[in-house]
Image (cartoon, rainbow, N blue to C red; front, side, top):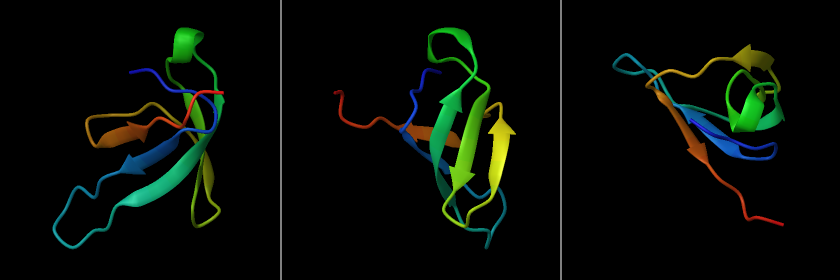
Length: 63
């Protein structure tokens, strides 16, 4: 998986009734866009993530 600072992410809910979590990648700590990622979720929570199969990246426009 590759991501860049500013990319939007979605962590899909794993159980029935749990909602998806949306956020933005603040920092990429791995080489070449690899994890770990520092993520700020839309609710303000920040964490360092190693994404799993429930994680999707929406790449932003290249500048």
